[in-house]
Length: 273
Image (tube, rainbow, N blue to C red; front, side, top):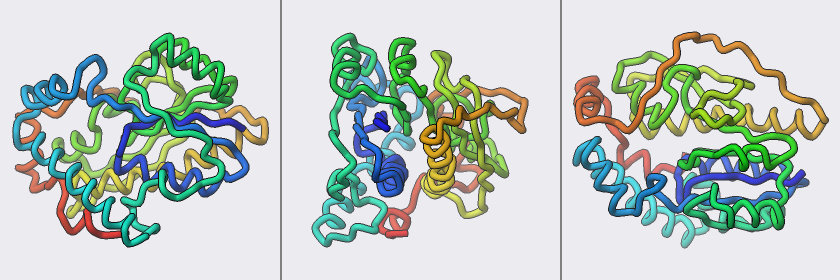
């Protein structure tokens, strides 16, 4: 099977899941496409300005610092060849089933779609924390379909930054959902879900990590079914209440902090667990 993974460049959480998938399915061929934009339709500075306007300096600075520390830690774990560390990138693990890593600022452009159809020829598309919206032609490209992992218990907390929003709103549990991709965001048929309890000590980072770890079994089961010529049947979600959230707002950041939450800790970042 030829599997195309759409993800975000240097995404800490996606890296964890992709490494597990590549290690498990070594008889399949993978092409990874990394999104190079922060927000679709905006340059880097335009995207940062939008984040500052909506989310405020506290949220944006925390995310920037996390990214900077992530790059530094990634450098040292590669230097020390600490391959089991969560920051060690799949790019340096020499997976024989990884055919190509490419980058794109617009996965819906005619040029990208032509290249995908001609050179990649995917049987399956997996979106793993990709921040670009897939349009109709891209969704219909693979014969076995396009699927997305979303770190919430859909249809609740559709949209952006669900791990932030559940903590900001004081939820006691969240989850991970695997669903078919449709043009409406996070609205496709749900294939499988896993509940993730929210711990009193959870940061946004630790919760995202645990949601990502829970996602592996869902993705692995999907691939196994498709390899066995089984079309996965949609399930009825346990939660019927639908909700949608966009970028974190300044008011929500205040609520997040009021609940005693942190975005991340340095100890979490340097930990190899």
